[in-house]
Image 1 (cartoon, rainbow, N blue to C red):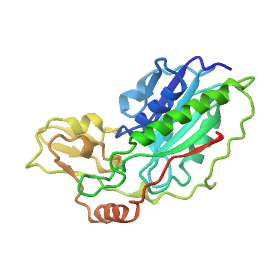
Image 2: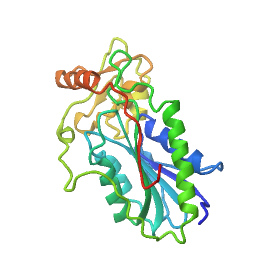
Image 3: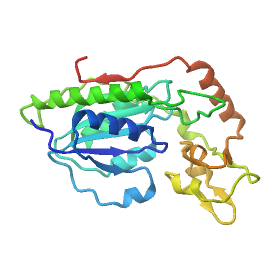
Length: 270
């Protein structure tokens, strides 16, 4: 088979998942690829025709060992017909646990035929300059591994007879999935009014439209998914964590998840 077109579908609040997918696509084809960005609310309002004979790379971050609920709900709107898919999760150097298996099962449910999968490392959402957790990743080594992965995916697809060939892609994880306690947390970053310029950047990058600007910054805590896009994108550093439990979690991650982990790939001979 020939890879005629590559499409990237992703939920990527801080850009690391998008970067990994773009790198994999470079290894598959030198042609332009189509992006379907489902990160922001307006992305969910686009009309996405059913997929058929293209190759689709689907990516999402890992939150607490699972996929973000909002990413799951947005992916569930997709429809495919035995479309070959590469499944990618990106985690912050702790563990990806059940997330990749969860993505595989969802992809099959909506009509994709998974040909390969991978778990890559990205800078942790909670990471800061002062409290690093895989800062700067994916780095140049990660990008090269993603491109090499893409080249091997192309080789695998080239020898396939049809897109509905049985792949039997083996993915680690547990089913039923382990409960994600992080999903039940009700906490969000706060705004330091002394340094806030009311520029609206935080509201513009929030995947759940949890932040509103009306003379000051207001956050609907129940909508916050703790992706930290608002913190990482605030030009004045005004968005911060003040919650003691979050500070404890961040410090634990910094102390216990500093040893470099490498990407893991599945469905491709290495």
